[in-house]
Length: 259
Length: 251
Ligand SMILES: Nc1ncnc2c1ncn2[C@@H]1O[C@H](COP(=O)(O)OP(=O)(O)O)[C@@H](O)[C@H]1O
Ligand SMILES: [Mg+2]
Image 1 (cartoon, chains in turn blue, yellow):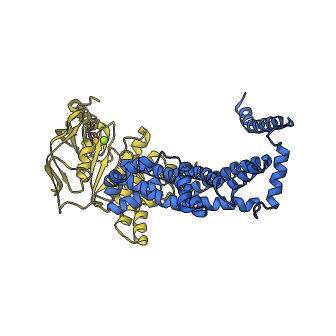
Image 2: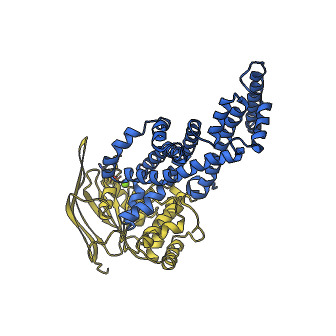
């Protein structure tokens, strides 16, 4: 095969793969007692919740409820996570004080915090935001810390020789050099934050895509469940695409396209 | 010949690193002078301690013993130019951003520092590349940025640590011409480190030959050849053979 043919093949393969997936799905939904809704049922249910509200909200409002929780939690996670990550990476003293506690709390899955946080904060918006915060904070801290540790010592020396004082060395040299690592942290954090919000909503919520899935379970509405699962996947994909665009804008020296 | 005053006097410099695998003596009793506006070359084999020596001159590291006396007192951080072998450019800054970094850190206002930076960008032959990022430049161009950035500190001492060591031969020759050209247009005191004998003779007013580690001073050569020099000139080749015979090129 010449390279042109190979290239064509790489466009065709994903289409075949998705078609196979749908065929398998149809096949599994055929038996009369199947617990799997057919693609057609799922599609119709999806179209239905786009216009007819469940719990006084149509689909887009549920998606927005979930997304809003993620974004609010995210603002805090980025701010505090970068602060902690830079502190751990930049100051030996800071590291000695805070790293042991961080290492101890870090391996606890965010979902394990749900019961405690619901007991503390009830079932309003706050507990969900806190859970998403926990889920995204850790990877931002870890990536920022690794990014600071990864800075080429030559770059730091260059900053010193050019006359940077301690504060300038941090803000003019170390932080800009760490931005790609922070963006990588945000990327991981976004997908884990999105998973956490769905988990949190499945336990206690009146709106959100996680809530919709639980509704589907309680009324035996499998088409609703599957439609929402697919929505979760698509939203996550869109966020990831958006982030890639942002990376190119914020950090053209790393992610931008150049000849 | 005119008598030039000493810009830097290095006296009995010693440096030993204490590591887990034992003590590494790197610099042993190094003494030399650098005259004002001189192009001095430090020639030594790889890993002999050349970078350590320059880093001490640039105040990035400290000697164990010995003295460095600067004419007019020790310059503050930011008032000595250093050019790195691996460029060490800030990858997120454009050519202009890199070159104006030092005056920016020192609080010079934007219009003044950019006008100055532009002069140095033009001096190193990068006019038109101000908005390029380092990753868009070739190795030789990156090092031109490195040189312009060091010049833009307005320091009268320029330390250059094997600045052309990472370049291919062709680019290296053109950069050697470029640096002489820059130095002749804008005279400064240059301490240029290399492990390449030809490069040393092509560039230097004077060559200080270092031994392999621990670096000691083996010999000093005055290069009295007119510029532009030629690699195939007889006097050039004779000096080259003399230096090679004395060199520990054991790497
Ligand atoms: N921070 C350090 N700790 C321990 N050893 C070092 C350190 N810096 C340099 N050295 C050692 O000093 C020697 C000289 O290094 P360097 O000055 O970089 O050589 P070069 O002449 O090639 O520039 C090397 O053997 C190196 O391992
Ligand atoms: Mg070196």
